[in-house]
Image (cartoon, rainbow, N blue to C red; front, side, top):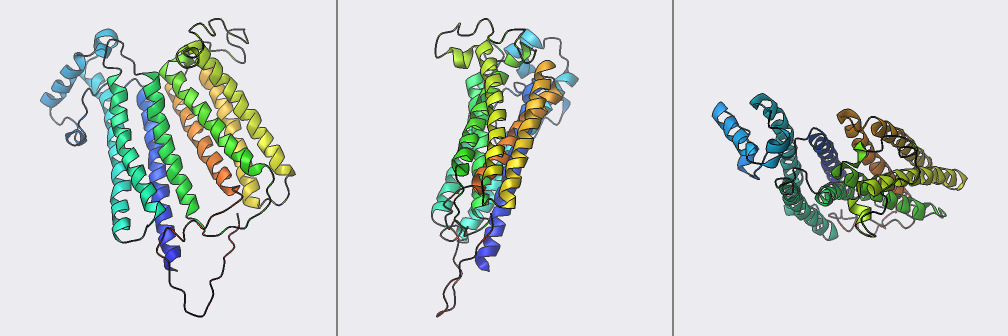
Length: 367
């Protein structure tokens, strides 16, 4: 019973942290779409917890902002009330990031000191803690790339910042699923385990190109569908050379993002067809595949509308959140279809002592 209650407590904590990271990604997307990310030109991890509280402090922050290219080249007509709006978007993004750190770090230390996590789990979670700290530094590294001659953050750094956030969210979410049950029934599930893992990799690749599309503002060009201004193969494709073109050419990046969108859609449909034809699947496994397919269909339609309207803030934010939901749904599905389930919680948590003379019973937990 001790193992069960401990596992449940850890799972709730990890899922809550994952949800906070999901919220953080959403706020980060809104910060980018409202062009607020360069409004705070200093990185103060401790003293930056408090915003400006007096008119004098606000004027000081505004003067700092005026020294950088975004104000000088784009927002030179901005007044103090308008500056406060973009400042608060970035401020709340950073404040939420600090909250995520506290919600994850404090319970982790407590659980570790109480011996409630042990072995591989405590090591993995402390590595996640270090990566969370690195994420804050990476965020500032990204912001610095826009405080130069061109007031726009590096697309590479933006993709890395988003990618690490989603990796941490996915890692904690996956670990929480590991703690849900100690034993699983081993079944012959055909190709489904490999297909679901491959689908997760494809979704991750699509999200990466979505980040590059955002970083290069590639969504503001070729706002037609299904062709790109009447062309299936747009002009300018391949103009930067073999390797750079795939990451730095806005035309190629949007083309890749569109192509991967079709690939994700067709793969989700294929996954659904194979699942329906595979015997021995549980109701939960079939439902998870259907939910994933529904998420992909909704995200595809939303992506088309976002493109046709040249990425307005509301649609752009919804599209990014939709991508995160597709990722979580596909992860959950892939986790359900793992063929060889490990006794995940047992070796990681404090084991309850069974009475002598009585053998342990293996609990079959349905998928």
